[in-house]
Image (tube, rainbow, N blue to C red):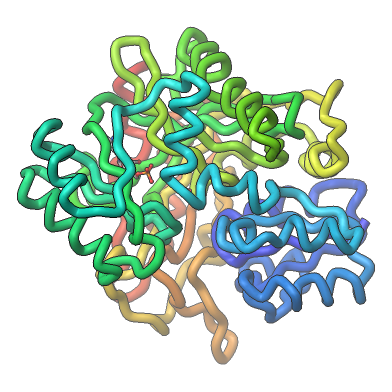
Length: 424
Ligand code: AMP
Ligand code: GLY
């Protein structure tokens, strides 16, 4: 089979790495890919939002399955387009991807189908939002309705800050069109977990549990990022929490989407807040998490490809997923200044040495190649992932890899996996 993976981050390197292990594969392409995917696939210089060009490539190359990594092409309708032209593709339709692309849609779905979540309001007018903020009090959470590259969420500590965030968004200054509607919601406390499942719209298989580290600095300090590290399994997801997440969140969402006339096919990612044995849903994503994908796929024993095909064919019944008992920990190495502005073009050393370590895999994210050297080209640059006998060993492996790699101004968290340690 010829497979096309769409995207160029750490998640897509992990997808290519895993798909390359399938005996069903003959050739993998990745668009646009990165220097990491280039070792396992043929990189094609087409951007993820150029969905017509991607279709043209898939048709001319006779691609048997396209796999979409990021949310942007999903929200642009790449799945609908490929299906229209008879090219098999893994991911939700444009209508189904609204579960991530519109926070108002997502919250309304949760409300309608009794999926536990924070109390909220959806606003286009500042005066109404202001009244809701006054009534709820601070801290309070303001979210741009549309896609904002993980940056559209403001946790306001005061009512004044909340009102000013709403004004910024509604005026279009903060996130353009994505902020023309806002969700204002109750602030939740607890411990977060990433609960992912694969579904064909009817049948659901949960993936192993995982936990992300959203804040830039150790001990969850500083602004939120796309994710600074992740590990699997996440002991905060006990068997009781797992059951609640499946019954109250994932099953209701999948059934709800089908009832709404937009059945969901793909990876459904529920961001959960767990407190006192109960789960609440912070958000849904229409794709694998990045960096959660890296540790999850390192632990997946089953061949991923038949699962992706089964979802595209609406034929997931009878499939199952086997997991390695080991733990996996991914530490994201980022450029100086991220999640704000950051420099590009710094030469990275040590990737080869780190990659040769036992149990260590280095996934590329924001990297590029110049004159035979790997240089930084994004905010999140590498995801150094360790597989070990238990989380302590996996943490050790990941950081042994991290220690071998450097560039000017590199930053990373030193406490990835620490929350798991507190539970063992
Ligand atoms: P979201 O993209 O909606 O998941 O928001 C990004 C991050 O903001 C989450 O991972 C949480 O850390 C935080 N967050 C979002 N909504 C809430 C909430 N209602 N209460 C507390 N934290 C939140
Ligand atoms: N790591 C969080 C996300 O992929 O949205």
